[in-house]
Amino acid sequence: MSRTIFVFGSNLAGRHGAGSALEAHRNHGAVRGVAEGLTGNAYAIPTKDKNLRTLPIKDIAASVNRFIFFAEDHPIWTFNLVAVGTGLAGYRAEKMADLFRHAPPNVIKPPEFLP
Image (tube, rainbow, N blue to C red; front, side, top):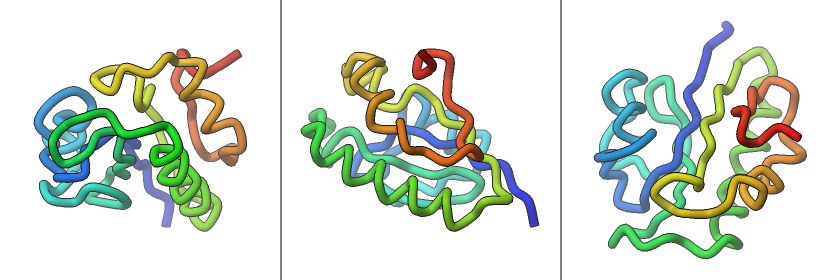
């Protein structure tokens, strides 16, 4: 069964209180307390820790890699990726886009991540 999944940046507390996380909670069923992975019709990629401090890029990269494997395992689903890490986390779009360079074709990248 095909699904459309909203992919957003979260924090390790799973608060979903601002930015794309709030959008995920309000409009895509993201459950508060779920910091990473599938939640409702959304997928959380943590970019901040439990105290809302920006995570190191290596930690975000590990979460992105887990997401990419998940997307590969669900090829009939469409994943609408927002510019994860570029808003409240403060990373440059080019740096974040590079983490998603191996994403499968069912991951729809935001304009900020396109060449």
